Length: 206
Image (cartoon, rainbow, N blue to C red; front, side, top):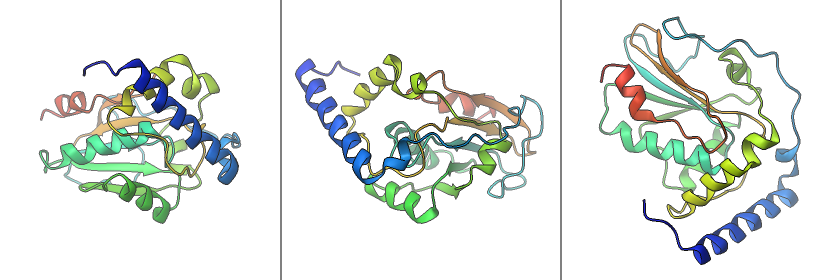
């Protein structure tokens, strides 16, 4: 990707700050760190994965647990999943949010939809906890690495949208084969460390 001009970056980041300030006013709860749930150890490669209703027997799947509705990194992940779903019809693409289904769908509609991606609402984060996906810290989502990744998304028209859920939730992505065995996983080093989904296909033998 070609570098974005510095003045465009500055303009874009100013708008990002506007979006965040807006959320401070209309959705202050998204900035409050929730009570941590008891979180299981993440499933190991080669082992069976925890239960998830959207998983179908005999079908491989890529499952992404998203940070929060409105997060630009979550949007980038869903956009890529939707783009790949058309070329990989033999794989189920599943995105788990911790918002209500209506808010999750409204968010996806705002950036063009999530065709080919099944949305799974998990408002109480029980599924997140069962799959070993817990909370992060401030450095994870507001550190230098995440902010640099955020600037890169601006050129693709991806920015903070109306937020739902909480900003402390971490993300993770898993590839499960047709027998329910985990073949690949990605736990981001920071919020902007997006999952390399083509690596998931390789692990699934696609």
